[in-house]
Image (cartoon, rainbow over all chains, first blue to last red; front, top):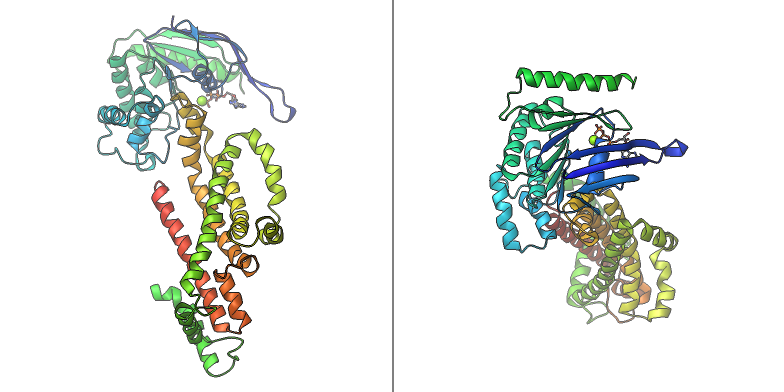
Length: 254
Length: 251
Ligand SMILES: Nc1ncnc2c1ncn2[C@@H]1O[C@H](COP(=O)(O)OP(=O)(O)OP(=O)(O)O)[C@@H](O)[C@H]1O
Ligand SMILES: [Mg+2]
């Protein structure tokens, strides 16, 4: 077991005297090192909150987050996070954004440049080294964001709907790209998504969350070997199973 | 097209010159544009008072504005960054700023003469006050306009507080900081001339030059001095805009 969450509670204070909003109430889960695990769940159930707690951006009210047996105190280079909205610094070029974490790590300029150039190459960003984020397509911006995180070689990578705002073709390409990266790197990925197809295509394992307050409804293994066929019967069965779980959760919401 | 933008002011100048040549306005009240140009030449060649030529007045004025403005920027930008980045610091300092801000810079002239005497420190202080508040307030607005998401993203990349300020809040606030600098410089320049009417006795400065011209009834030189003030203000603003385009290229 490498990432383990036990009894995580989190609520946000209600606005103008409303009762507090319970987002997580005793969530338990575990992710084995080296796996790619997706998290799906109804909208607003607390998936982003969960990732932010793991990343150390938000404290849990109660409960324990352990990575490799030790608690993480605040954000750390060992845990990387990729955001849905890319969160690139608009005043930095592609290279500048990718180098950002290396600057913080205290690397010399030449070393940073060399490392960043390698990532530019590997991420298909050659020719756009000096472009600002607003000059890049959505898919390219997301590649810069992923490169910026992975260049620090985090052991655990958290991704919050990273491909959520891409068109479906770009999204498919990015999924393949992510898989090829992950297969080379052997890091652990927790991948939040709305998109059940995406979870089924990418993951070793899928965690289905309940509606708010979120707990783990089901933990499903995805045994198919890669490369996967998005429309194989096994994929379809799994998809159907997840969708029906999610549908039951929606019923209670009306 | 280019002429299209300028035809109204040009037409007014021609009209003004025409009315003056016809004797509609007495020259001791409103000199004609040509007389003002002649006054400008006098200021540049003979000087006012005689011997103290225009470029020296201009230099002294620029020096005063430069000193006051530099102090305002050097204190205002860091203070604004701190106040914007830390809500606690913001709450601590902002009542003080809100209390001092409504006092017009010129109302500080008497006390500033008392404190600093007559000369560069006193004029610089007045300009400092005029430029300081817009710089601080715009810097704060710039910091608070930076998306918290960017701060979180760099925290996950290992940034500490100082790096957040240096690598995210400062560049993110830069467009607003430039707004503050431009407004501050504009106000500083306007304040300067008024400060020189009273607060300067060194014999140099555009405000001092204009007051001397008034004392000996030279409306042409008064208005030439006003024109120099306006054109210099325009040039300074143009320089800041140029700097802005260099430093904020992503906008
Ligand atoms: N800082 C906060 N203050 C108050 N409420 C919050 C805060 N962050 C999240 N919430 C609330 O907590 C709930 C869960 O939010 P969260 O963003 O974790 O959900 P999510 O599962 O990621 O949603 P989505 O599928 O839309 O991305 C939402 O109702 C949200 O409004
Ligand atoms: Mg979310």
